[in-house]
Length: 485
Image (cartoon, rainbow, N blue to C red; front, top):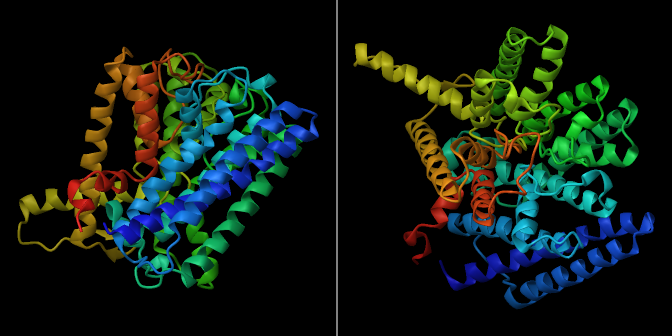
């Protein structure tokens, strides 16, 4: 890693920090509008500190010419940006007057920016509106950042099989700017349009305008932070739940590639091959959970309503809740834990392993079984009607192995802080999937993460970031050979 590339990484981090400082003006305006002058001043002071830090980095490390096709530079920009903005995003929370420790502030900010939705805050119903807006805005900004990263960087870096979609992102390694800017613009149009549509729909369904805007931002980002302690369950409204289900699924579908579809004027995108399997998994999980709840004594209408919302929330990695599903029995707990690992489509705001990797793993395993009987047979692995090369298959298998091993290793570390097995492993699983609630009485849907030890909070926040960065992106930067010239 050369000095000029490191300088450019610091320069871009400064740009991101300045942008985040500008975003802090939005909750300041909200607090001014409701006569919460103290809250507004807190955000303005935080914006000044953050903006000053970012401006210093921009001025000190500006580089005129840097080779942006270098993979090391792209990896380091991605990892460092998510870490730096998580720290800076915590500043208003730390200074908010809620008496949060720095650990709690960073946990909340990282949860928001990675669109995880885990929270340590209580009393949301009476919290200053500016703080509620800041959490939602962080999730919304994190969501668009995730989509741009998924379309522009990960395919070129071959992260866990993402090279399958390299052609969809216009060969980023050779044309880093014109096409990416065009795609990013259309991504933003789709993202903003869906957010506005969700906000209007929730407002019509019965939410207040402020709640509708906040929930729209966190729904499309599949983030799940709410303005109420009881989450969506506070409203007890079928209309609100139906609207939220529709837009949670919309956020988990490949939004980035809808933009590619618009840019290419009707050309089909390879990512479309994930949509039907994803919807099939959602529907199957809802039916299975409904059948289980009926067998446990729930009436069919109630079982269907609760299962449809909460299953969709977890499989899309959103994290809203209308009930404490960790109390539904062993089958339900096992099902929800498995759903943590599924995730949405590549090119969406959803996290976890993602559908296309499951498709390739299943196809590849089927081929391996067949070759045991017919070793000379030619059995291609196909995705969206095209053969998948061995490099992509290998990357997907490596991703699965590292994902599970990282999940188990971090779970063991969290257990050393005193959490029980279910709380520890579900906390890490939901964090790596960016899903929100854990399982069990300590970190379940009816509680939050405020009571767990600080060490566990740092480990879970770390899991949020590496899960959001598709795991391999982060792990590569930790290798000694990454830093050699």
